[in-house]
Image (tube, helix red, strand yellow):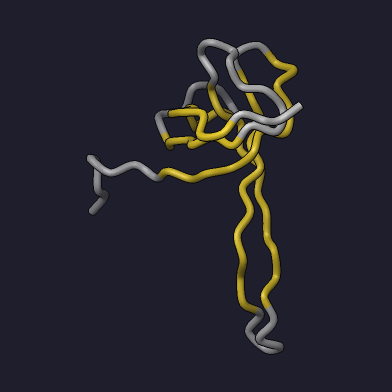
Length: 86
């Protein structure tokens, strides 16, 4: 049975903001290798909805899973945690 009240939230950095109301967010995590016991850095990119076009490249953002907004967008930008220093 699914938990309908709880949605996933992840923190990542904005890679591109060239689209209108859409940003690409890169999320990294450390995973331990099964055989060699070495930590490996894995990453995945998410397309997230940014309603006010407020995110810039390099910003650290919190994204929340939501209903499908388009073919690839299934996440929304909840808040900008840290602005990029230019």
